[in-house]
Image 1 (cartoon, one colour):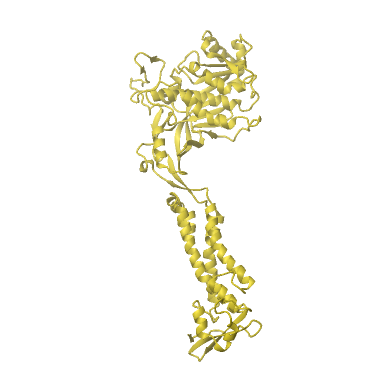
Image 2 (cartoon, one colour):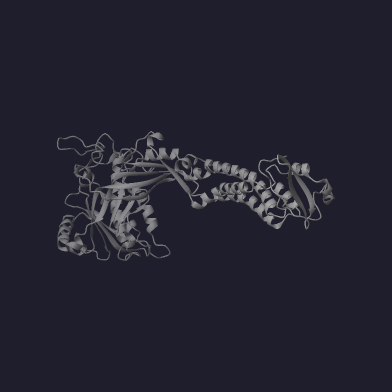
Length: 555
């Protein structure tokens, strides 16, 4: 039963509340201890009578289960010590197997009343309805775990991880040039789950969600002439708009050494699906569009079907696994990116300077292989955080984001997207905020339990196996003239009075000067019989005077 309490997933999960599993296993071990103690004394007495020297002090030490009994043989001291240590060791050892987990698949509505909706939402506590946020807090909050994990340690660059690699609560590094920022559960649902969880417990949620993906456009390498032509056209169309050119302050030597250039598709500022990023030498003050082309990288941004696995604990939520193997979403579900004026250049240049500055021409990480992952992550997180900020601000009964028509500051009203017949698209239509059916997602309620280890199973099985072995050996010694009731009363009832002189001087202390033998002699008349006990010096007499006979009633 103790093995079941640990190894069976359903049982261990139910016992995983507080210390219930430890209590249950401890109780079962106590029962094992009692059962083992009830059979070991008879077994040891039979061994002494059948194979030993039948020393009275050995019988006395076994009956009292006292390894330190006077005149007790060394072998019996070791055996009795072993039988005392095994239960104690088992009761201590099983408690060291912490760190295990037991999980049960659950439906969220069994524990929280809020449905499981996913979407472009901020982490709990980062945004309140009615605010007019920029998205910068969401940007830094989402990217900080990635930045902390990939920063140099003791001056050496960390190696790139195996892909895909999750960071924080929704950053998924797909490869060296692509990053996805996954949609997450709504904050109210997360806080409701955290209220349910006890210390050490967690929910593991796996669901199909949408990711905002930024990936490096490879046309610069595959078709440089077409890339340069497209870039020159976009760059020339942006001339005169100085807002997208900013200097990078080098924090290491306090000199302005490089510039970060960022601009979206200048010919259509509502289309955010193409973002040009360049880090160049700051001293080239009048760099031209042709000169900038060799430094610039183009990133494509789109919404794509992904899969995410999160762990929700009382401390927060973490993305533990993910993939984006699905196809990009269809037209209407890309409109938040391709038909949305987000003013990214105005808002995000300082954040990108802070995020990418170390990878500039004179930055300490300008040769790092992390430049690609950092740039892709910054672009994806920039789009995602800005969309999150705007979608949280608006009322949920209309489409939420700024379109090409812009934002009317006087009326605090947003123009939403419409279908061809003029119907407003809903949050779900544009895949901004959407439900996931229970059949498409899995939620496991995880509780801390004892580690499911073969060694733990062995520890819990030792005493039952010993009991079975002892009972088996005991049955093979059924003819030994000794029974489980053997003790002081049985010895006195059959003791030969003529041999009592060998016990003189021990009436109070219970200790004899010399070791003596207890000879057990069965006597019968064919139908009934009795046992006669004789006490003789250790070096006299044989301890094996016969065996019990079948069909004879001994008394």
